[in-house]
Length: 176
Image (spheres, rainbow, N blue to C red):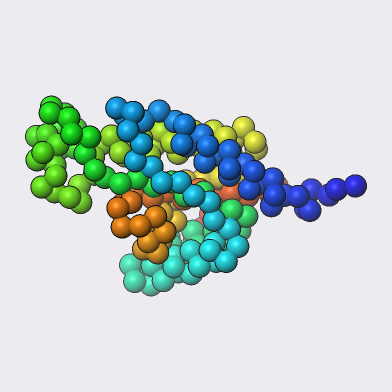
């Protein structure tokens, strides 16, 4: 007999792997892939939670403490990030600049295609979590800590984290 508690962590890692695949194969604007995708657990997950607690102190935003507690409740975290490089379209302006050439003068402003691709990829990943009945939620706070830790390198500017759990009640909702 194999009890659920004995294989739950393994099953959640399998779901996370499928989520990563769904994010990678999600449609990308102009067919250009700017995503970075990873999963963390164990010691890396603990370090991420510690960084979130540090951010609560330095930013004064207690949401980081709340979400750090959620990270510690999760078995695994899926990270999805993107750079913010323009697609070099001669006429677009969706980022608020006249064109991609003008946008390149403002390196810290995101390209709308990159952020849209990130959203589509995250939605695809979340659909896999839902299809497998895993508890999940997108958290920007996880991504901010991952960025501070430089987990994807300096070029990846926007990161979202998706914690996974398998409990009687999703711990990532109805939080205080």
